[in-house]
Length: 90
Image 1: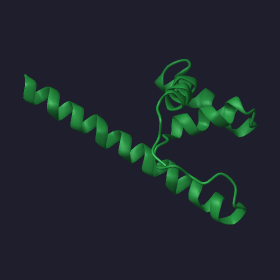
Image 2 (image 1 turned 135 degrees about the vertical axis):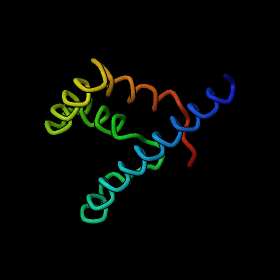
Image 3 (image 1 turned 45 degrees about the vertical axis):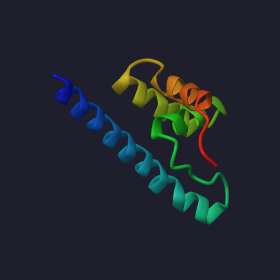
Image 4 (image 1 turned 120 degrees about the vertical axis):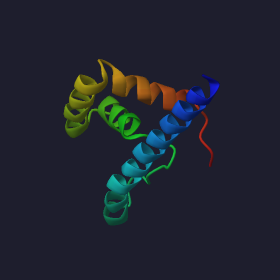
């Protein structure tokens, strides 16, 4: 049973890394062209969308609705708040 827990823990970390990598791939061209808001390898797509929705960006508010419909109400806001509570490396 402990081995199963370890496997699941590793799989969840792999999913998280893929999510963070996807966020960097999406944001990198925006940063390269505009010079605005460098992407962080320590932020998930949901946290990025949640932060942008909190700032009032229309695209992010709509994206948050979609992600919240898939992952549960308040998902993006919880991701944003979690990222605020965790100190990210410089």
